[in-house]
Every structure is written in C-alpha cells, then in structure tokens.
Image 1 (cartoon, rainbow, N blue to C red):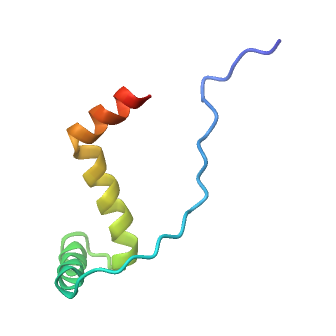
Image 2 (image 1 turned 135 degrees about the horizontal axis):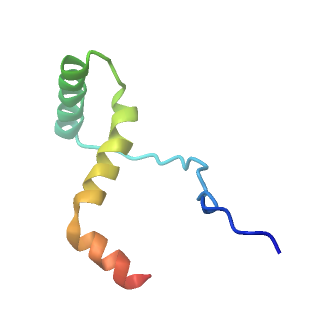
Length: 73
C-alpha cells in the first residue's frame, strides 16, 4: 500500500460555458468596472474575463451561502 500524497486529487477544472443575458444598465456598469480595473491595475481585461472572478468573489464573501453549503455537505 502506498502512502497518500499530501496534495489531494485536484477537482474537475473543465470550464463550463454559461450564456446569460444582462440588462443594458448592468452591461454599462460592467464596462465601467472593466475601465476602472484597467486604470487601477494597468491591464485591460474583457468583461467576460472579469465576471467569473467577480462572481467567485461574491460567493466566497457571502457568509450565509457559505454556511448553507457547509451544512449541506
């Protein structure tokens, strides 16, 4: 029997394509955010690249959501 590795098996990292429609006002805000991001970090990023990171940050910071997920597992 081999010793288990310290690093656990990596989770599935296959990207999932998600298509969604947003209101014009939200699109305008996302474009403005991307412009502010570029001004802050000196690097332009497409809105489509920023949105997944924004959602991940939002979900990670939502304590109620995180607590509910822990209770479910």
